[in-house]
Image (cartoon, rainbow, N blue to C red):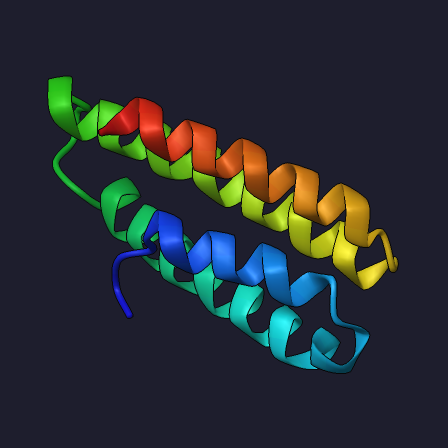
Length: 98
């Protein structure tokens, strides 16, 4: 899984409503964060100085990592509603990038 789809995020939001799938949900969110963090790291190590599209990609990935990290932090604090809300915001952000 290198690309995170809207459907995957929507499925994750649905899983968050089921306490029995809490660990599965957290694992899935951690994987999403890991993917975006790795992509951000590669973008940060890219061509310097930053030029046009590379800078935009880095900025987008940084924003995605921040939202996913906030959602994971909320989930780890049993803030399932907040995590779901942040993931809905993430979907909206993904739609803006399309």
